[in-house]
Image 1 (cartoon, rainbow, N blue to C red):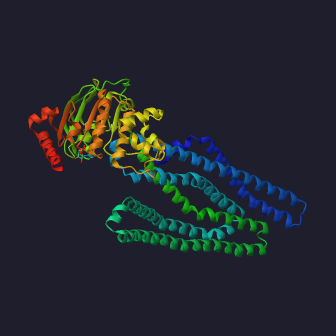
Image 2: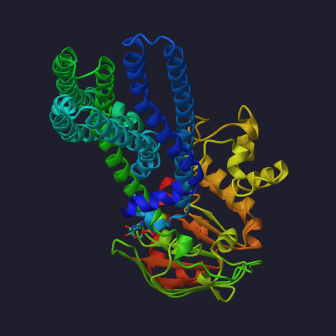
Length: 578
Ligand code: ADP
Ligand code: MG
């Protein structure tokens, strides 16, 4: 019930159209019920009694009824899909909008496949219901009740005889839908499994080939494909059995009418016209009964899908969590962590009691082994996650007091895993500022040391990259991501291992370019190589989520702690390499 009420909020917007659809459906069905009556009068009042003067009028009436019914049907058949499409369009967009706003914590746990199928398959199930199910339910109930009342009022004995097969038909209809439902669910599931087998295979095709496991993969796919075939065949068998069975029961009903009704006509208890009308009514009632199972399925599917969609929509997006009200108009770049601890939702404690301070324009570097919490720490600055304990201040204000969008517009981030969209090089660099001029784009590309490479591409800055575009190496992607962050000209710049995928030589060049670019802003850098962070104003050494040392390069070497250990290790391996 709650689901239906929520659904109605979306449909309710179009209530006037819904009323029109409902009125048209009702009127069309009423006319449909009236049609056999006209036929009956043509036979009984005109043909049988040879009153030919009446015939043209009755035929014109029949024609008029058919025409009007056609017009009404046209209106519903046009309006009903229109409303259904509009409503699903609204829901689809609302869902996508909502998914955009859900927090990192949500996306950490959500399965991409689930969100995909909710935005597509579940929305389609709703569409099926709103498009066909709704009007079908209304008209079927109306036809069923109408036929029942009309038949019984015309001749209750004949009604009883001709409708005697109805209980059997209804029984088998419901049995059919009970049997076929789990089979269809099974087929859907299996279809998903097969699709994900294909997807995984395509994504890992290089691994497959490298280990010569093609045969294994072919067998794996054949198994899933075969299972799908078997399941589909089960549904085919069930359909093949129940379809003709229901046709048979319907036909049996007609036989009874012809037999019992025919007898009554011969005895003079029933007029020929009534007899014909009766037959027509029975014909009208069979279809609604037969598709009742289908309608029930559509409704149940739609409710299940709506439930899954609303489950996502009911999750509060990050902006609802706690948005501050200070609009950040300028930023000096003073950042302070005060006793910050962070625990992920799954209970793993990633940071404990972190405190440090970055003055405007400083460069702060983080060093530590994998899993020591470096990425987690910098993700707290643009509030991808909120600190579990402690506070973070920018320019003296708690970051939770700033408006989220304004905070993020002052923090540029080059993430550890770079992602480029299927767009041109220029489009990717100008992602945050689509209005940037080509000169500005070129300037940051030069700073990120990627300009020369870009102009060597077939179409320069207009070359398509990302999926289905030119293939780029890890280092090239990283440099484009750096250019993208630089274009925002952020007062606070964060680079998470952004130079890990480039060779030492390129890195040195990026570093040189970055010196001028980082002078005017507060920069947080995570890097594996000490050479990258040597010139930092402050180096924070992390271990298992704790700060173990803080200081400049020289201070830390002096201290002879973990930093010095790592430094010596890197020096040694460098010497060996030389
Ligand atoms: P680093 O960047 O220093 O390699 P991370 O900050 O990525 O380390 O990870 C710190 C710890 O937090 C690790 O133990 C890691 O397993 C855990 N962790 C990282 N991301 C998540 C996440 N999204 N959910 C749960 N735990 C996470
Ligand atoms: Mg990391």
